[in-house]
Image (cartoon, rainbow, N blue to C red; front, side, top):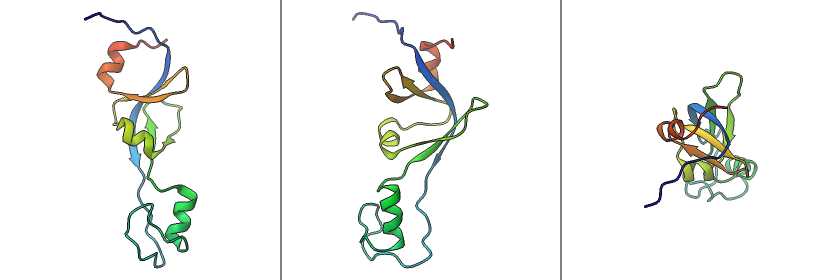
Length: 112
């Protein structure tokens, strides 16, 4: 099989922590439907939260690199990439956002 060498430039931050978002605790009664995101009635406190937030939970990625603030990622990113602490949040030149395990990233890229 042919061999390849990576020659791409990317932006990346090592991940210190992935803080997964949790569903809020509601102060008032919520709709009587299933307690699953995306099944809300449209009128209660939970439904208001879903309209503003969306039907899926995201996370905050906390970078290990000093000087970079935590930033949000949506549920689609979490589902597709399953980021974990110690790996890298990677952004390619075309804007595509990805995740790379530390070993694979560190073997393939050198900081410039």
